[in-house]
Amino acid sequence: MHKSGIIFVLLATCLGGRVGWAQEAPEPKQVEAAVTAGVRWLVKNQIAAGADAGSWEGTQYQTTVASLAGLALLANGHLPGEGEAGKAVDRAMRYVQASMTPDGFVGARGNSMYVHAICTLFGLSYLGMSPAAAQEQELAAWCRKSIRLIIQAQGVRKTDVDQGGWRYGPLSADSDVSVTSWQLLALHAARQCGFEVPEEVLARGLNYLNRAFVEKADGAAGFVYRPGVSQSPEPGVTGAALFIKSLLEREADGKFVTSYEYLRKFSPAWGGEQYKGYFYFVSFYVAQGMFQLGDKPWAEYRSPLQRLLVEHQLSDGTWEFPPDNRLQQDSVGPAYATAFAVLLLSLDQQYLPMYQRQMGLFR
Image (cartoon, rainbow, N blue to C red; front, side):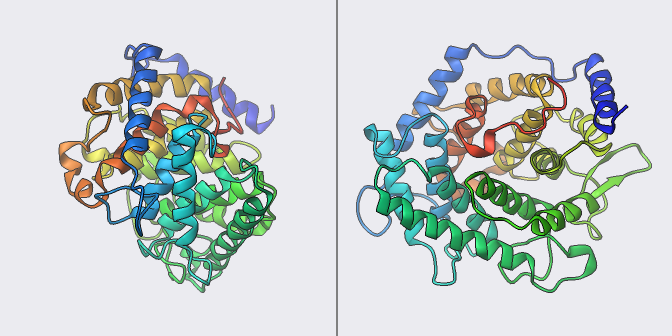
């Protein structure tokens, strides 16, 4: 039997057992209403004038929030320039484009490759939607410059264990799985848009991710935050690694099944140690990993996640952070949480390039 077929059978066996996350999903109309309210709030509360026009108040990471909010609007079919939501997408894109430094770095306002990758994803998701040819050409050049910086940042001299990965800055000499996953996601989206991304860049990134896989004596098997430094697997980076491996690898390996079994131990919850203080980031990683595994793993995870988000939406359409994540809320504001929640509730629509299922081991 082909290796992928073996993995398929093993995953089917895992799914045939007790479903640890079994929970009634909210009605589709409840999810739709939550998304509509979140989108309405994002559009209504976007900064309309001044130096920060196109972003949102209450955040130290305005380009990140503008990009996440823009992606949330695009994820629900709001095309640039069409209606109030489409105009909001345009304003967010102009704001993000203007933040690029001469060397192509879009993460300067947060001094972070996280910011750079998220902004790049927004630009790539927007590309091809504007009816103005000159604007499209300008954005394509912007995306090309941003992609080039990601590739250059991978080439910084690093230790053997950190080779192939990325970390916080474009000149970082170390790496971690979380930042690396965002860069590989941006490069995947770039390739989908027709940009040339050298195969060796993707291969080096995947090699780094795969070095992060560990199997512990207590049976825990998943991905660690920093290979060679971290000792134990974590749900967030395990979900991120499965997500990226599903997008970029041509066939499944045994890490998929063991990592899936590890993730099933962590039911979606409103906070808790599994999130390390980053509820929305970790939820995004794990949700994407489950979605890429296929319909059944995704359905298993989606029901409790959607119920959690629907139940914790505030009356004005926004979301807060869980109580043990409130320190992060002080620096990113309600638009960040709301954009992420809308993105999580919109995954099934698959409008965004990054939402397209690639492998689908178990359907």
